[in-house]
Length: 471
Image (cartoon, rainbow, N blue to C red):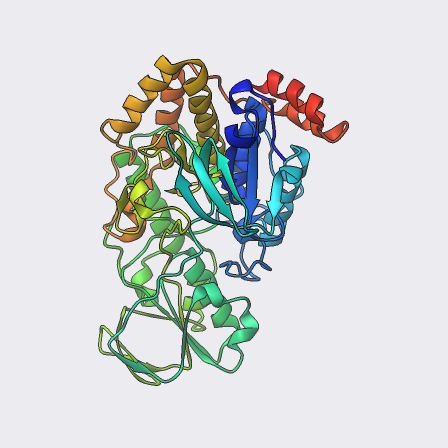
């Protein structure tokens, strides 16, 4: 099951262990294969895709879920989403895309499905002892934790007691659950707004509870996906961007206080964007009612911070997730609350331990997963082939953290503790790549890998030839 044949990472104890076959794990697998680094992927579920497979136990996916970034700007490097996909693909289309990605690059046969990593402990010196759910313990040269950040729901605590049903949105699957019920959705993130819209169309009554005001960005601006529209203009200073786009939003949506929503307590871009074209529609038609934060629960009554009350049957808490890597001791990572503080979200205090996919930013991230996975492979190769360059990169990891906020003062919430401004992040990563002298990721970078997978299934000889061309 190992990929590539680099002498330094030639399988067995020299291979890289990748935990998780979701988008981040697949990006790392492709990067390792292209660089000639042996690897094995362990996925506890029965197929690739991670959270995007609605059949996976514990996934936060629901039937009406779609990408919140457009297909145009959301794909992996050198592997665009299909042209016939809609602007905002459904969860089933995203899953099909991820499966196609794995097949096209010959990754599927390198993944042990139905096999969880139960525990990983540092070995003597360099490397990891990895205990699998099969009962087997294996040694690996390096460990990449790509197991995802939305598997451990965070539930709020409220004074009082509730006699109805209260559960986290991770348990929600579809709008039929709301028939005949009076539903309160707590949380103003993208999932919370989606679920509130489902409730508006199917529940007997529906409310959306928000702790603060938000900027609601329509999914299309002048007929163009919002992220494509935002990326299409000339580069502007941040302060000017905020003024221009806030003025545009006011023109498009008006004063949201008329719909019962609180005025935002922050400027545009200072919190994760809420991309939703329907929530304002439902609020303006009376199918959904906005409420402030919950103050107290009294039997079947919910009391809000403004003193108003609602009789509720079901509370859905779309209140986010804690980041947990349960198979590695927490002390091996740097944390701020429940958020990782790894360098560039990926590099830890150890040269053989990486975190991929634990990234919060205001744009599509699959291309960023690719760039970070590429950096991980280059760093691993440098440790064996160019120790001096590896030492220079280690100084970067151990040095002061770069400001990747792009001058934005993000709101003080747990979600934003490690938030990155996408343009600032991309600029920094590209500058760093050039400084380190690492090869660029460009169109066609993985063409040889796909050709090898398509002809003969990417056998050992084909993989080696593809890796030589891609590295």
